[in-house]
Image 1 (cartoon, rainbow, N blue to C red):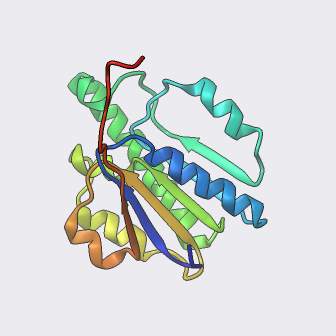
Image 2 (spheres, one colour):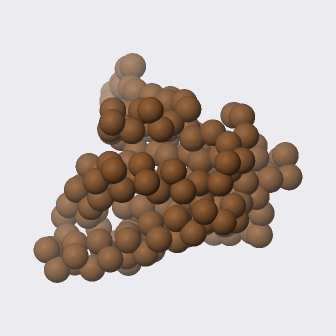
Image 3 (tube, rainbow, N blue to C red):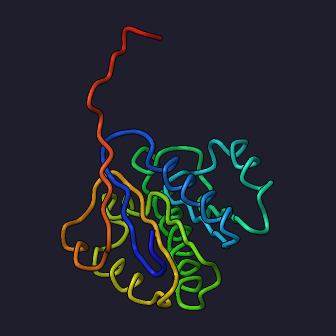
Length: 168
């Protein structure tokens, strides 16, 4: 990845977050700082964050949501509360992007907040335009909005080619 790029990792397949985290590890090996902001992950799986916490202060991870469930399964009141938490995450991302607080910013599952109609593509585009020139950004999520295409440098699509559920 070149300095200052915006890369998207999207698709129905598994491994988008893993690929982004791998790029974060690669950045650490080049003595670069990494911030990860996760969206739509809720509180579940907090134990897995312990591994990432060992990499601080070079790699920092943030989650702003408080619920344990998937956004679409929450009550209307819980969804509204999570929308505010997600907005806090977006505001933090805006600060990181505009100040150049790190070399690589990973916005994990940020494309999902478009799918959930929490933000519009225009808001995400404005967020990306606030980035300092030499910062790298990685966006992940299942569905990539074509109207964002002119604002990104690279799109990686991860899809299932074959899934064999008989082997377990």
